[in-house]
Amino acid sequence: MATRARRSLRHQIADDLRSRVLTGELTAGSQLPSEPELARTLQVSRGSVRAAIALLEEEGVLRRLHGSGTYVNDRPLLRDDVGRNLSVTEMITATGRRPGALHARAALEPAPSDVAAAFSLPEGTPLSALRRVRTADGRPVVDTTDWCRPETLAPQELSKLAGGSIYAALAQRGISIHHGVATMLPSVADPRLARRLRIPASSLLLTMFQVDSTADGMVALVSLEHYRADAFEISVYRRGPGDDRQAAE
Image 1: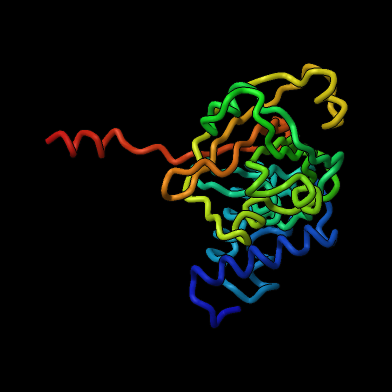
Image 2: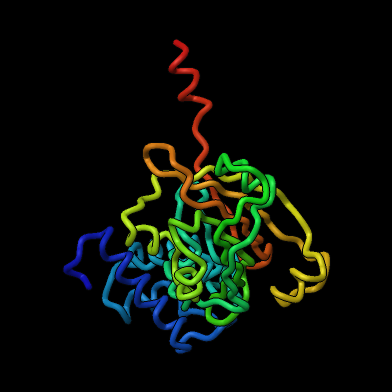
């Protein structure tokens, strides 16, 4: 490890520690060896160990308690940077967990008013809809419904995706998502969502309605996603106010 560049080295150490967590060598709630001990074991500098631990703390894999030490999180959070348009599959995979799906069902359904408006279609126009609960290592984390035009992806094609990414399926059709516009609101789980996500009724959720478009502005996909509040941490890059003040001068 000592031959790697500093930035590369901290990521390599983080990969090693993350792997130990995922394989169960470092169990949930267990305490890591001290930074000096880890540095001696890995034959790297203490600064590199500290930088790697900081990366895993940002991911929610580890937590540091002042005056106590560093511990493996009992239930690491899935981190979602809403400034990046990642699929749920990519977001789960990025944390080293296995994406999957429960209760998947695809059908031709009449478009609700807000979905139809996004596609600039009359309400009730038949659209391909895929409903499923996304899982991370078997744990339900997001209830999703995705709509697209039947000529883009027919229900039979959506039903083959299981735990896969619709973005990837669209890309195979030559349809590249350029950007998405998302509206996020706090909500609570009704009895149906509570059963699907295996949480108590009235549990907190983050609900996201997103419209995904190609570079030429064609709406290709509309999604409604209900995120378990106890499974995710949402981050967003916020500019300024310095940039705005400088632009005004």
